[in-house]
Image (cartoon, rainbow, N blue to C red; front, side):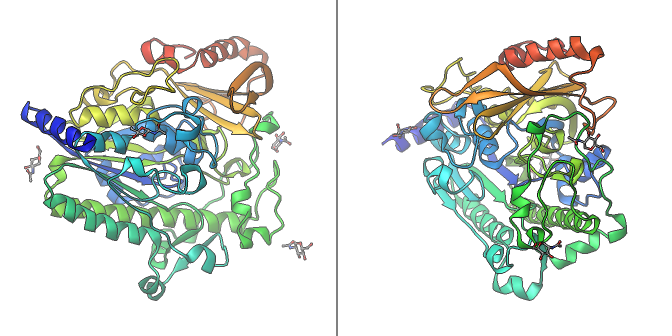
Length: 497
Ligand SMILES: *[C@@H]1O[C@H](CO)[C@@H](O)[C@H](O)[C@H]1NC(C)=O
Ligand SMILES: *[C@@H]1O[C@H](CO)[C@@H](O)[C@H](O)[C@H]1NC(C)=O
Ligand SMILES: *[C@@H]1O[C@H](CO)[C@@H](O)[C@H](O)[C@H]1NC(C)=O
Ligand SMILES: *[C@@H]1O[C@H](CO)[C@@H](O)[C@H](O)[C@H]1NC(C)=O
């Protein structure tokens, strides 16, 4: 009955004059901005022709930040349009409908509004936190796809996979592409517009990819990061022992500890970086296949396309590996949104944007009324957002915009690292935090502070938080951080430039 009502509403909406566009929502797992279009970041070689081409027809957001550098908290945040302190998802164990509220997600919104909502691969972080179920209420159809190489490969952190092996046992992203093509063909025939979410696994560990991709990365081009040490004067709480990488047998066999200021052997660093880069190019090729199918079906002009990585990734910078920190390497991720008719010639913005901005953007791009801003407490509010639609940046990439972005990472269950980035600085404060049911930060109990000056030190190699000449900027940023995202959302004048 409810479904029927939604379809009727939708029909009314179309008749009254809205044009409907489909949505293709693509996520890559653990992808930092390792794309051709982000060369200025000097992250190492990137060969991503398909994503570069898509970026050329999109709003490319050069400075997009996740709200938490970990899969489930980040995905939960951008899929609900709310921040981790609202979803209460800070780890891989909890499910927002249990601990945050019964929120309407992005795919669910489109499903409720007459779209066919179809998902595949990794969209919500599957497993315990989503009741082992990929959040069924969000979808009309969901395809949970897995590869079994992880086990078969004896938990090796990376390896190439031959054509013969793949014919027998395709890599998960090949299964995702096959399903995406099949679904697109079905959806193209249907009468309903669609929201199709395609979640690729690579470049997530283990770095498994077809062997030919190594050829794009000759070993002579692979370098060790220049800053393979912890930032000077970094508080220990900022560090993450990269246990995820160490859990692979080949890395564990090296007897590495993951401790502060230790590094992996040079050759291992190079091998891992090369394997990550190759995995990125493989994922790029998979995205290319989905886009080619969309083109073949003549749906390009009717489809909004969003592409993101779910958070950043350290590949030996600071001696760190993976996510789970508040460093730039972990919270900065690629983001592009293509809206036919608005971004056809490509628009690049350097404005500071956040992943919570995606949900309101895609809703507005599809022609629906703007999502309401969430009230201070929104546990009981099923539909609202804590982000801001990016549509205005599509016609004017220099339009007045938010002057800061926020990320956070919970460490050891009782410490929260709150981080703010402005045009020039990153300021992070690690404070005591009590979990359920209060979820309260005690800002009087500071365990560590970090200040990085991105103009002089974009790699974040020197923590300036205790430098005498930084007292006033620390005070300003501290106040802005504590005031939170809401004032920033409404005021575009500069705070702590
Ligand atoms: C959550 O909301 C949906 C409608 O959006 C409703 O069908 C469902 O019963 C709700 N679940 C709970 C536990 O309240
Ligand atoms: C880590 O190494 C750097 C560079 O050698 C040094 O400046 C820094 O103090 C070290 N950090 C710790 C906590 O030992
Ligand atoms: C790791 O430790 C084990 C047990 O102490 C030892 O047998 C092995 O040789 C060590 N491996 C390396 C690479 O140091
Ligand atoms: C798609 O839109 C572009 C730009 O508006 C236009 O040039 C092109 O002809 C359209 N293609 C189709 C197949 O309608």
